Image (tube, rainbow, N blue to C red; front, top):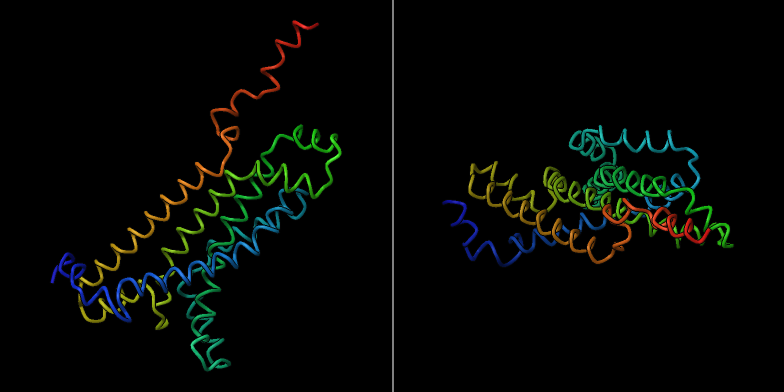
Length: 242
């Protein structure tokens, strides 16, 4: 059986264990991990970006997470957690932990870098207009940091979706199931078909994020428009008035 035959087989498109079912489970794991990572990284990234405090420690710790061996950490967590939990959560929790650790660094770095890149004169102007700290964060810093923040979330999403296949190593469902089961049965069509579906899913998510970026990011924050700051453009007019 070839890849096309495996993908076109009606038995692979209906029922438990089918391609749509495994895509759904894969996305559930990924979205839950991303939601938890965002709940951790967004407050930390905002704090680091706004205050600059703990930047070296927090950013250094986040970047150190990138070096963690995902599969090795997953197996270790299963060995630690499984004896205390008898349900399927003994495998779900470790899988989510490793995916969260993978997603936190790009979200945290993107948001913190976006806030730190804002021209301080913009912050000073907002403060001079009477904005409170909360207003500066929510109405100035976060909107201005949106391009880099979205880039971090996009990177985290693609990494998590690609890496969520490791859940199959601990007997969980997801697109990794096709790769693991195919390898066990020497069914290379299943392995290649599962890998192809995963790649197409990643491309689809990349396209979605590109569209969201176009819709959500103000044109005034684009690189092209930021090359000529409005303040500098107003200088010649100010000289004429003088």
